[in-house]
Length: 402
Image 1 (cartoon, rainbow, N blue to C red):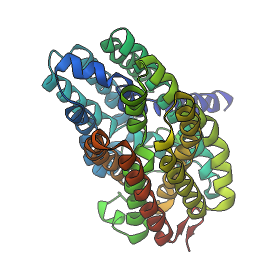
Image 2: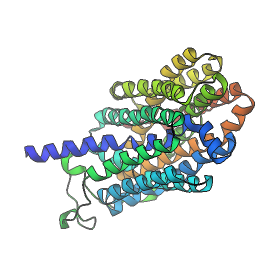
Image 3: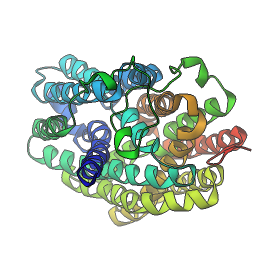
């Protein structure tokens, strides 16, 4: 029994570490935008398509990836998805031209759609309703670690060789793929067999709930509104890191490494904040916590235009990073209980709309920023107000509908 529990804990830790992959793939390029522009002879607006090509297939496949994984078997899907993600990341490193680079980004985003929701669903399904926030908070801390590491790695790559940043990211993905448990092979673990109620250690590799999950279970108003909250938050203040990166490079004139350290501050604040915010969320309730987090995040992003010095930009972004991670913990916690009969599907659907928001923002705010950085920041913050309206309208809380 002790050995079995130890195995379960080890697998759980691996799932937490797997949460780093998405932020690494998304944010590692932010400090390297000038270098990518120079290498591929493209404009700032065209660089936005590198984010688009990652986020659109990611968001699109998230609509179905959770439900597919629950049918085929989560462990059966997760390990090869991480391995292929590493291959696609290596493709970014060796891309001879911009179209090749964009194609590799499509591969990254597609594989990540089968990674992020599976990890979170495997972790939250073992938690009681009054501890969901804690589990999501810990997972968000590891996501913040990835978000923290990405700009630092990207900044070092910008000042040396940007391709090396993708080589390192690919190596991390390959290592995680090797350490994850292999797909189940015993008959009792087949998705076609009747499932028993899993213990916490068994739940990590459980394959399919009964009855089989269906996409129509996601078409309920609370689930749709929580997913809309994620969309608006990501389109607005949660996606402000790309604007901060551009402020550092093009407005203040920082180097890639300096911007990496600046962005690292926000990631570090988010990493420290996420676990205690998960505990606070369990006490406050998901809707109230989400409202506080989004409103705070929006207000801080609205302050960013006044930051014309490195230190002021770094200080505001540090606090904003904590609020951003609190926002992510809040809507992911609500999504994890929005559809108990299709938990992974609800999470993947919500994450789909979140990263759709990031994708839209990458091509909307960059051209606006080129004309007026202030307008880009204020418009982004204003969208956060709409996210508050959506989460309040959901009438969903971590203890169920109210």
